[in-house]
View 1 (cartoon, protein in one colour):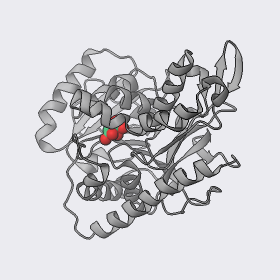
View 2: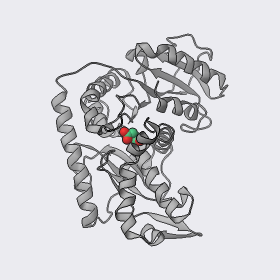
View 3: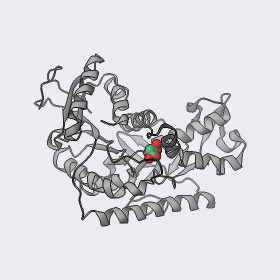
View 4: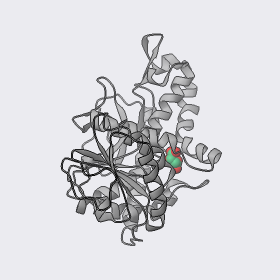
Length: 356
Ligand code: LMR
């Protein structure tokens, strides 16, 4: 159980993600040495006395952890240390996400919605999707909402407005230092009036320079300062991402999400998980088409795409050397029927639950 999962569980269990009337079952999958720690987390969740939480299932068995999943949050991977680039993680993590994709294929529902958080998240997500060929590609996504929130907050602080006064920032591409945080289409509500971000900020050189690098390098800055990677903000972003996937985006707003690039209208190579602006309705996302792209943006969108192509090709070349399953993760499962519990549950059996 890593820090992100630990920070995430309370919000999900209390109904912040899947709704205030949605009973929850949490399924926590980890490697065998972590099972005693999971038992402690189970105790804490019980001690929260949360009305929606019906069952918590700690396990180290994929056939238990992935069975009948409706939602899966793949948090675990080898973490990035100070000085490491995400690419350094690729080899270790490709094998993990191949195994998890295969487990989703075998045990989860075909309607499962998958969010990959472990880095390098885009490529891990692509590998998981390729390892689960009977699950639609559209059901796989990776987390760039953390970058989206970072961009939103940077602009809001600069303008002296709350974060929710800024909308329609975009993160294009990879969840890495090549990502492109773009505010050309963002709006800021200043004293009740919506204005374009460039007019609200009134500092083009900041928006084209330090703003972009601050967001691109924020993960590394947090690691440097905390000696640990982001956990609270990552957990918040996971909740935002999954809640929007479940309940949809607001009219007139798009959010950033790493999704399958097939059929995109922005000239991004198809066989990638790339972060785009998306609208979500009925648990289905659509890329927001038709935004004008200037030369400045084009170059940055292409650069991050090129990094993803390289990561994908490297990952695919590693796939023949599978180093086995080794991971920490937590997942969400929603089911509409009761099922036998593999472990004694203090909550008894129930139906129509969300499982994490
Ligand atoms: C983050 O963005 O904070 C995390 O993905 C950690 C990292 O490696 O940057």
